Amino acid sequence: MNTANFRYLHTMLRVKNLEKSVDFYTRLLGMRELRRREVPEGKYTLSFVGYGPEETHTVLELTYNWGKDDGYELGTAFGHLAIGVPDVAATCEALRKEGVKIVREPGPVKFGTTIIAFIEDPDGYKIELIQRS
Image 1: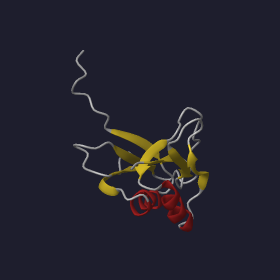
Image 2: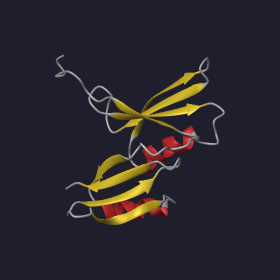
Image 3: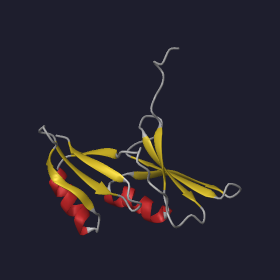
Image 4: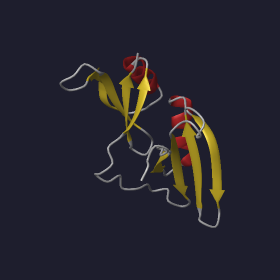
């Protein structure tokens, strides 16, 4: 099998409040909502958000199952999403002012020098912020 033309397309997260999640990823993390699809027969809505077009960028699929407003068990297998930012400390400070939970303050990764921090989205999913020059 030749995998030369394979490409990672997206990660899907189930969310309990689609508008709150879209706002978090777009307004606070700078992504754009690329497309939205309502599926009445399946009772769900999909929103795809990202930093560039799906044809060339990996994106995040937010899935809202209608009536599932009490959330989901996050499980123990999922780790986190990672987003590169120019200044982790400044990003955390701006997000903190917006009420975002910082679960690991900015600082070097254990046994390394890369500056990271962890935040939580509205559903409790962990997002690692990695300082990129």
